[in-house]
Amino acid sequence: MEDIINLLKYILLTLQLVFSLYLLTPFLFYIIFIVRKKLRFLDRISRMPILIKDDFKFNVIITAHQETDFIPPLLDSLQKQSYQNFQVYVVADDMPASINFDSERVITLHPPIPLHSKINSIAYAMDRIGNKQEVVLILDADNLLHPDFLSVMNTYFQKGYQVVQADFKSKNSDTPIALMDSVGDMYNFFVDREMRMELGLSSAIWGAGIAFQRRLYDGISYMDKLGGFDKKLQMHLASGVDRIAFAKEAVLYDEKIVDAAALQRQRTRWISAQLKYTKQNLGFLFNAILRFDVNSIYFGFCNVRPPLFITLVMAIVLAVINLWIMPWMSVFWMLAVIVFAIGFILIVRLKTREDRYLKALKSLPQFLFAQVLASLQTGKAKRSFMKTTHHHVVYIDDILNKHGN
Image (cartoon, rainbow, N blue to C red; front, top):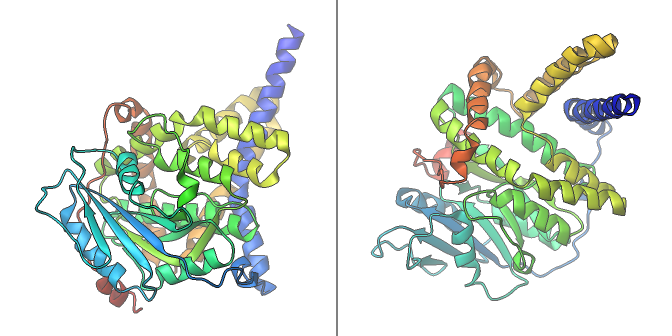
């Protein structure tokens, strides 16, 4: 019996260590950022020399499932790139054969049968890219690119990176949910991409705006075709390269979720994908520990991290449990949650000076409740594509003019 009690104590101690790191890391990263800024440190990419003088060709894959109206604005943003060495493949999934966007740099691909899967759409386009040393860039139909996007990406590849994730900004912010969605991106991209890049660690990737050498995609194997594209891809890419870079200067604009119903549907798909690849993420982390590869250990540690609302719930649960075991630890968990909240607000403030984003935090309960509901419906994502519907057709010039760029 004593052995069982000791085992439970070790498990509890491990859980507390892990979840405290998840909660306190954002504030620590903020402090590191401020100190580096005060000391006028150059960012990592500025300190790196050009290793490859040749320009890279970008093969842009646009997965467009029934979203005809969004393709012209995206192609317009590509045509306005300052860097012109690219070829576009529009996978017109489940669209009439009469619809095409063909031009000098655009090839429209019509699968013979509807794919209803981003994974299948990417594979369909990949088969058309013969040169394994060229770069592939994955985009969603609702994305738009800043005119310097490809030029910035090319610089990162010239400096030796083989996998580069772009930064995200919102196309729309006209509802409280859209603002909260944008706030979430600001926080996540700072913690899991920008600061990891600056500390010499591999960045997390996203489902769009990810560029990599074509050869790196070979050999990937998904559990199914319904979701989890980026969850599996980032493990696959992290196993094949030394570091995954984050290009904060390469700006991609995407559409934010506008209402709670759409948010719940999207988060259901995301949470399901994370749960689906939990076992593989744990395997990645275990192998990294055996190799004592610090970069891979932290990458795997972050990959097994549960969604933020679950992390916060766990902090409360641990605080309650400690009331009977180590009362002083309950105080620690209260302070940890407060420190996390302060860090979250400071990071958002760092990324934007617009007060409306901080005021949007009053919608946080609704935002979290939608994610709780999403976590209870993950079974739906195992049976359905659960596509996110987009609504805002806007051109890159409209966005740049709005922000004075």
